[in-house]
Amino acid sequence: MRSGGKLNLAALASGNGSNLQALINECEAGRIDARIAIVISDNPDAKALQRARKHSIQAVALEREKFGLREEFDSALADAAEEAGADLVCLAGFMRLVSPAFLDRFNGWVVNIHPALLPSFPGLKAQKQALDYGVKISGCTVHFVDEGVDTGPIILQSAVEVLPDDTVETLSARILKQEHLLYPKAIQLIAKGAVKPGSGRKAISHY
Ligand code: GRF
Image (cartoon, rainbow, N blue to C red; front, side):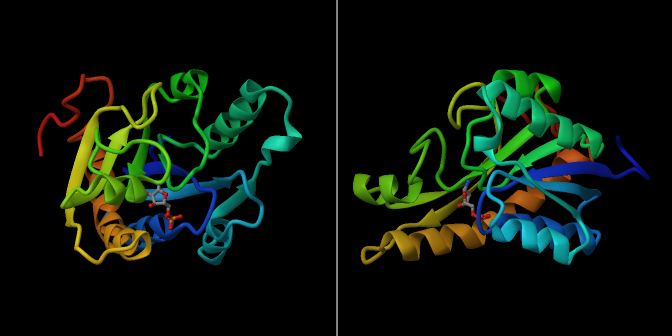
């Protein structure tokens, strides 16, 4: 658990891991009072795992197919994060829902980043949902994870303008840039004790 005053993070990522990279960079630069203890992926080919190895961070692939019940998979995920001493689990493009049992193992200390201004456009393809709906402003949200899909208490949000000629690609790229600023900022709020889970919908007690 907390070592040298730093929050120990376990990051769960299925793909590219650009948000993971932003967290790694900010931790290494000392702008977040945290260290990434482990990166876990359900995809052995995830670039996120390569990024972790490049920074000498423990990188573990756990493939869903190798486990029977979902509970067994989730419990292996939680075991790996716990053995690495994680205080906080950061979902960073992890393409699976985590179970209530997983959340219990971390007493709610699990956060996620979502590419829309929740509660609008939860779930998959949030940027496409926003474009299809025709909103003029979208953005990204960092929130605690609860049992629903992108429904947990909001920690921070950042707004991004939707331009008339935006495609899913251009809008996603503009939002992703903001994600890379927002996620580290939210983790630092948690690391310095300004935000805690379990305090209702208003996750922030003081800045
Ligand atoms: C991001 O858009 C994030 O909001 C969503 O999944 C994407 C992951 O991107 N949850 P990356 O793997 O961090 O580049």
